[in-house]
Length: 459
Image (tube, rainbow, N blue to C red; front, side):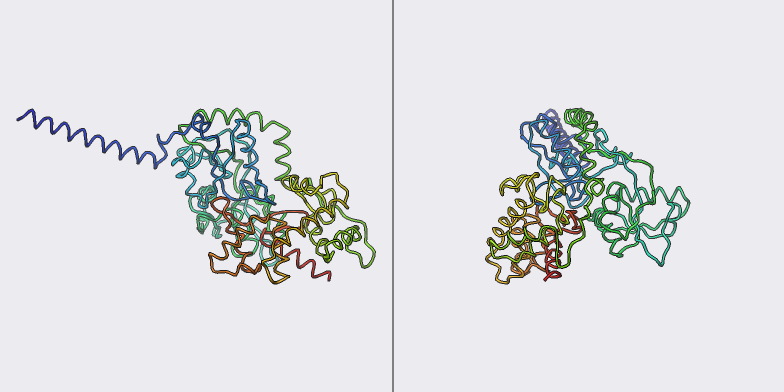
């Protein structure tokens, strides 16, 4: 009898141990400890490297049907060096990055993450691929003085995402200067670019940003100041799970070579020194009544399809400011800023003459316009066409379907489908990236309206 009771106790203890093991195993996974592993061998079996990214100019965005972004292009080169396909998963909420990584939803984190002691408790980091520092973003105003020293932030309201590196910096800065800086928290799915836009539109007074992003923003908003430094230099790197030594070693070996290459130097120039490397050239003075040096070419191309030539001229004006040698993000080139693959489809190449560039664009625009035959209003149809030229028809199709889901009119661009461009899935969530193509600076969803307004100003 005693032996039987002892056996029961043993079974009971074994069962308790088993369930406790399951419980603590699940807890450790949630905190990012032992499971899951998913190291390089497992990634090779999948045939793809999955990266968790945010939608921003420095991480990842889509422009004219091409995947772009400073971090995206680095990791795309890394994936190709391994013979792998790169898969991007957009994370809306920065608090979800670590959880998604440890749940095995991605293999790397790429969101301009600085190497900090708190972050090192949660994840491993690759070798740093960039060094930057944090700056204060503030609106220029004639009726208020700019904050020129970090020590002058005492008592000021600065908006940050709770728990972010900027939140930590303000807390430490308050301790350093001995004065309280009022941290005003904003939704966790708002990124640095969103905050900068809010400063530029005077919805908030101050925010923080990394200097490299602030430099890009200065090109887009002439009413903000980003000169005030609030931190020392910080190392930016990719985040990994703590139990992925194979992936970390391979990534570090790649970065060690790549970051000293001419390819990487060109990449930095393209994203951080875009305006310096690609200035809009000044054209010679035009005779009265002329719009550009290429008016006759625009007229000739438009006449073949019965178009008003000023529409084509307006596109060229916004895309390149009539610069046949303009170069843009992702390799966009020429008067009409064709992407390489698209240009080749229409017989247009970087060394093509202005006439060939304009004729190719006219064929493409006419084709896209005909594809929107379901839009009855000619003005709205034109705006759908212009938006498709800029973002790709597939994206605008998606935005139209999303408009229907949200009770908006799928046949109206302004205030309807236009709004949905900000919420397109690529594959999880699509923000409205601020794009810089030639003479146009602003959100992608505003491109069609900006071009159409330019056209109307010439009629």
